Image (cartoon, one colour):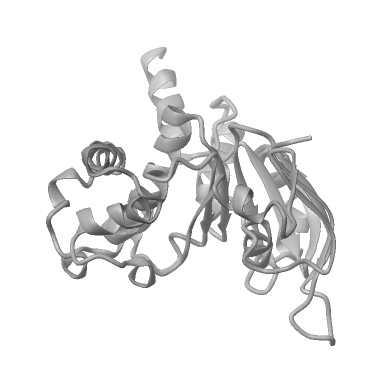
Length: 275
């Protein structure tokens, strides 16, 4: 059993059709798992069900050994941090510092400890020099980094990103994807990212692919991207970096199993140095 264990999960917003239909998957502790699917596939609904923001109609959700129910809801929410799509909807304070402090104040963290926590988590998302800035003056990517810092300050065991890059420009998307990868590599947090960004999926450890409220594929990025026919049926594509790697292979250039652009560049540099 993983730190997140979902079994036979069912949910619907109305009586006409099931939004989530008998969904089962596990997320292992310390992994970076992505849930991918086109719009309407049910991926964001799954995130909200896991975070206890929606009530399931059937099946079970177990978080770190605790069944998600009314009795355990508070304990489970203390283990989970969630970052949503629109960073503007997540700001509370008049400055970045105030915003990161908001959750700490609600948990009655003493002021003498609060400053250190704020500074530590601002540094993790590279926002230290903006602590006294007004959030309205920040870019979309910077706002989302502040939202992440505010969640990290609460010391969650699991960090859920619900389409956290979907409303950002390309630069902002790259910023947040780098932050997510950095958090996973440096802190060992369990990360569950709901996304339609194929390049982000390529950089994750494990993938759950949803279509029509059902799980249609699970596995590593290589395993999932290896079934291009099923991906096309789901209206998804393979990453450019993987297409490029395959073309290199056809030309006789062997690369290791790195799907991300960063991994591919590293592999090409290694190949060039050995020529």
